[in-house]
Length: 406
Image (cartoon, rainbow, N blue to C red; front, side, top):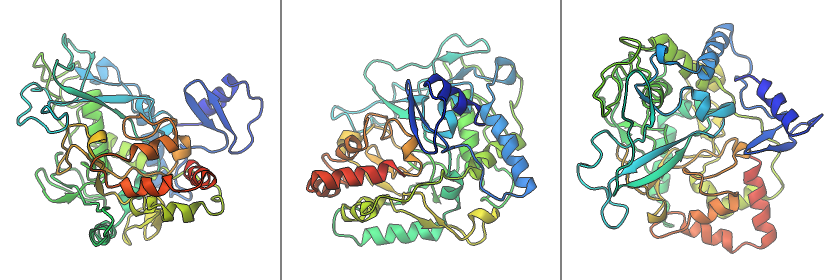
């Protein structure tokens, strides 16, 4: 997305000037002036810049019924869930049929024959949406930020596996693990980002709140199909719907493979918003309270990555890309790949200063609140929260400030 909306929001907020990194609130949106979230990696070749620009247009595009929108959908544009390439304001409602404990999935999920996602919007002759029936657990997932995703994809597999091994040797209850997933899309083209065949198993998942998606082409095709009902060569079938519709107002595939690749390249080539220098003592407290055990400040990327800016560098994502058991209070009753109901991939903290809510469902309104929500029965983060609680008020404020400036 381009920066025109930034100027408009500044005007709405009554600002005649916005010094670099000044925070301005405008309703439910947060503007960090001079701190853009939609910029490409610096120094792109003309070819990569062109791909970024094409993908930018797809990301902003509002699909219409004649473009293949639906027959069931959640939003009509990527930007509707990821405004300014950031987090939200769009969200997805997920459903799970659970046992009396409120966590354990019921085998076979008989109340949910159309899947786990609420889809209320209809087009192309659909007369019924998918809503939550009585007796199911409903949870919210806020759309994640998309900037910096190229760094996450570029992290070397062995860097993730080495982190998994290090954590397995810990004695403090923190032990993340890879979500081993099966490739759900059709084969694309080998452009150097991983070519997988349908059914390929034991792959390292890294995208999605439970790390169920392998690479950004798959991520883009999955979002087009699942959120907008837009089919592509990677995801050629419409999602199940109560009317049994097998197509929409645009017969056949709705977009071609190049469109999916452009969308993937746009997210792949977005830079991480530049950070200010951390407050003195903040990184040390982040380590001391074990926050950095899961929110690993950086992981090394592949040496042979085809985008030079992403090759053999430290990716400052503040995540280990591993699943962690966060306990029953954060469980949603859903499984994704090998991820269980209470397991979540460590959320990347890069660009967190642009967020207005925290955790997968936005239940935390402050960083301190998010820290407290990490504590609960069965959570791997209990000791970390207790260490945070043991800090002085000044130290807590300093640690929170450090995280808020990421």
